[in-house]
Image (tube, rainbow, N blue to C red):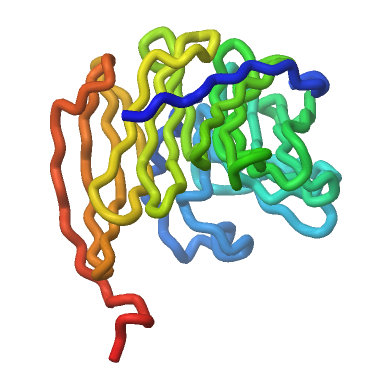
Length: 274
C-alpha cells in the first residue's frame, strides 16, 4: 500500500452520477442507429426517452428519441469536442469531453430539453478529461501533466483543484461517491502498471489507498458499489500475453475481502511470434 500526497490548490477557473439505466435491446437494423453509426451502448435513458450525441466539424449535436427511437428533438452547440462521458442528474444533461478548439477538458450542462445552460473548462492545455460525478455540484476528474512525472490526477470541485501527486505517475479512470466521501480509481505508472484505489473524505483528504499488483500491467476497467462494498473489475496481463480479469470486493476500510480470477488466453504479442 502506498501513500499519495494530497495537495489542495485554488484553480482559477470559471463557473460549472448517476449510473445510466440499462437500455433494452433494439433491432440493430433500425434506421436511426445505422444513420448515425451508433449502437445501443451510445443511448442514455432519461425518463421514457433516450439521448445520444454526435460531433462533427460544426459542433456537438444532442438528439432525443422517444421510446420507439424516433427523433423528437435535436440541439446543436457550436462547440466541437471529443466526448468522454454523458450523465443525467437532477433533470440536467452533463457532457464531459475535450474541447478541440481550446485543447482542454470541458463540461457542458444542458436542460433535459437540450438548452445549453453552462460550459466550463478544466485544467491546462492537453489535460485529459476522464470522469465526473454530481454531488450538489459537478466534480470533475482529469489527468494532468506533472512537473516531475508524466501524469498526475487533478480533481476539480467548484473553484478548487485537488491534486494527487507522488514521485510516481498516476492516472484516473473513475471517480465515485462512497461512504460519505469519494473514491478515485485508476492506475499507477511505474516499470509496470498497477491498479490504484484512493478513498478520501468530502474535502479530498486521503483516508486510505490500495496499490494492486497481480501481474505486469493492471487496469481498473469497472467499478460498482453495493451494500457499502466496492466491487472492482481489474484487467491484468503478464509477460506471456496471458490476461486475467479479477473481480475484487473491498470493504469500506480498504480491505480486500474477496478475489476471483478469470483467465483469458489471447494471441501472443507480435514481438513473441516466431
